[in-house]
Length: 432
Image (cartoon, rainbow, N blue to C red; front, side):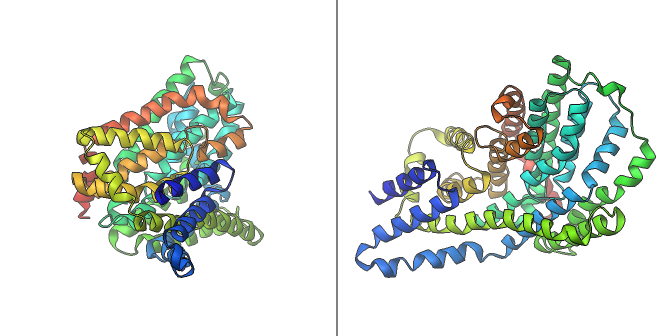
């Protein structure tokens, strides 16, 4: 009975317009109070304890740093220089600017761990350029929103950090390595419908007439941005620093590039950059901490085991259960952000992972692919919200373009299910 009330309170608060973080915390606290009615105040001590326990995890220190990296590189002009270099390579023509947007977003995924930050950095440059070339704003917003979703697959990734905290045995380096190949495949898969749609609907008619940047000059200007993922990922692989320390190194590298090399960031710009990163990090970590209360109430009320047993004994079999989870999480992804999905559903799915002996790293990549799809699936698509705001279009206008891109990423997810080594080969090769 109390377990039912827990979910009803959460859903009721969320649909009433209460922020997701507050809805999770309030529902969890109310369930704990009802479950321990006779000693209510003693039982409620679990609320602050689990609020702190949700935050008191070393890997979470990397989140505000990677968010700050995204803000720094957004303002440093690195994205613009990478775009010019990519255009110098592929040239001009119908469908080339969408291709460049996706490639640059994938590359920036190796610098920032935040999808919305990636969408802002790429969208700030590419949406205006695509508009000048004759691409509709709704199409440009769809391409940038979908491309930024690869950010949580290509390391470093905030999603992988949170998953590693929730699941025993899933190390951050192994998850980072496992996300590389599926992330690149997802980017390539998005390029196909983006270019096809652009050419089919004769978009970008003015693109061929635009000048092509000189190759060597654009390469020189892009070198500092190109070196960032090498420093971050190479340093982790060489053992120079942990993923958390790598985030701090990336912050100082980004400040050096922005303030000394490109001189696009001044001392006056530091306060708005820090404020923007602090606000976004605060939102993420508040969701994490309040979801800890919700997760504690789930385990205390004994909700997880009965739900897991019901699914296991449903007669669907391993792949039937996996299909059910995919359908559920993609649907939920239309309404909840990725971090909330991880925090709510991973504890519920942990018994299933154990029962079917699924590799925790492979399942983390699969779950992150589902969340990536949710980041550009209306009505609540965080990446699409950012790109639509930059393009000045309504999210409903992107639905016709988003569909083929969702299908492309879904096919990549099917490949990862059919061939788990797509995710597991690189971690095994690197010895994680």
